[in-house]
Image (cartoon, rainbow, N blue to C red):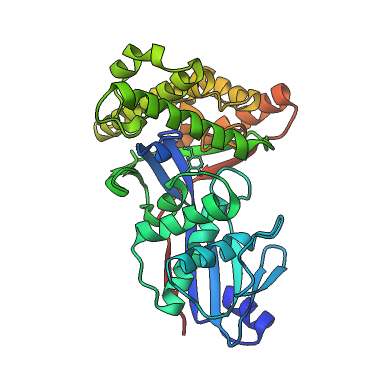
Length: 384
Ligand code: GLA
């Protein structure tokens, strides 16, 4: 689609800025970001684009070119989100910028995205970061990337009420083509770019389950992690978050925690260990070990964090029994959403066909399967 031509058709002028921000995959390090832990993730080659031109007055118009739906708003009337409106992700960015003393002028914009919606690939963070990059370029706003990520997180935490971490925005901003990024959410930086061994892809298999309680389940997991860390800090000096706890310390202090707190903590501590182990495995090209860590992560989600669901378990059970798959796990928040499957490129077609058939038989639904390429992070350019 010629996005500039579409912009001109709708608004009668040319856009001045184009931005793009990709969706992401969480590869390993589940629910560790808000515990100040580490995550291996990547950006995918599916992106959200935003084309923008400033206009006079206070009214903004945004058109989604996927379905030509439009949202209009006055810059002075955006303090509260609107029910079920994708424009919230953009208005939320403006609200969070305002909290930091940053103002923008009114604008017209179009958006277009190839990030699948509600598929666990962070289409919302992609939209937030596409808006952030467009505003930065169009209105000369200079913030560091971690600050932009925090603005996106603020949209979720404050504007929309999901107490998520920084992973989604971070991965969208810092992704590197054909590589995973190892991020540290204590220092809020990318520690390392970890090249993916050639010849393998991640197949995304969507469980097609949209858990209606996702937000409240997510927020309650976060609370359990935080109360576990608080109780442990009373007996272990120097503990601020679960990031600081070793498996041995956790096991020795099991009696200080409720059963739930202990299980949640064991998942987070184990995930941080697996992230570092995976980085080492990839450095020595040990794809077998890397895959085994993905399976371990899923088991930990099932038993300890309890954020899997029967459909995700069906997908991962098939993977474990198939000689074509090297590793698989649920990815992202959980309670539905997607699983990722590590497969050699030569086997992808056969694997997808078999996985589809199995899932149809076991779950009585058609799974959405997406073969992902790993892409670069967000950016923006001036047009014309
Ligand atoms: C969601 C959140 C992230 C992260 C993952 C789980 O994607 O938005 O911040 O917590 O879940 O790792």
